Image (cartoon, rainbow, N blue to C red; front, side):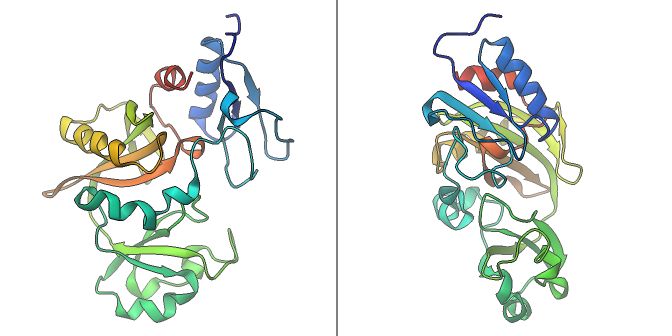
Length: 247
């Protein structure tokens, strides 16, 4: 297909995940230029408004085309906005270095710990309260900052999860996924999950985001988190719909 005049250029780290290669194919099929980028390559000299980046956000600071500001997607920034929609409403904000002091005062036997930042220097995880330590959160492996802000919350029994892609505050694609295996599922979300996604999109801290919704057995559907669209795994979402929405 001929390139579309004025179409956004996609800068894609195709080694990122399986969905990235599908996005590259969809962008080319729609007539958008595609630049394959790998960690270590120079940054393309393109204005932000003319490109979209999909790849490892921590590997190349200042990459053009990143959709959204990671500072606005900190849990501490968006949690007060969404209120009862949030899965984790009862939280403790702390730092990695303060875990030793904070741990024993937590009222939960099992704790979900994640970074405050959407850049996620370590993956969120569930630990027994007595296991909480800097080392258990990958300190010294992926990062060295003991002042790294973190979020602690009671672990909850999540039965199902869905990923939604939001462009201009509109849900344009979705799929199910398994958090443990980081695998997408071609499973349509039920109406209750879609309703939470639409309300979460309206309250999102950015116009373009990826958001996750879960079902908790006997308790309903909740917003899990917001992610930067440029760095998220799109799993089994309709990449053609995403490319069209961002054209």
